[in-house]
Image (tube, rainbow, N blue to C red; front, side, top):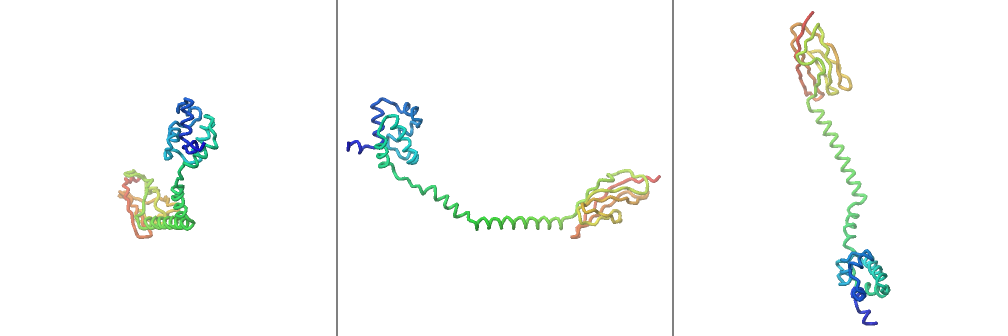
Length: 213
């Protein structure tokens, strides 16, 4: 009995299996344990086996099918199974927990808020210093105008002053404008001049043909 206890659990399983003429493939089908694990267990190749709780489950299933004393087999497994370093995986988790602290959350929150604020200031600054945009819906270029007035309408940036042929034009809060501009037979174009609060100016010229009735 003492000689049996000195054997490895894999040797015990292999001896019983071969004595009963049961192949590893058959044992795999009956226990649902991959033959690679069965082979590693019989050869005491612990590196090829999973953690102890899973390996002990393998041993229990195999012993149940081969009718081997589970208590004796598990005692041999506990004796021979190497103690694996369980600190390998917890270390990265521990480092991550130490890295992501409430202070870290506050820090990144402040950074994001500062980034958003600076982006807003940058947008406001660029909007302030760039020349205003003018979109003319009417009249179209080279449009024939009949009469002494021409309807002009369109959109500009908000908070700009707009002058058309030296005539100030009211601009709504949304930047829309619409008015009648006096023209005469010699008028060949309309000059739209928009000036921002920073002094930047945009000028657009729209050619027209005036026909007086």
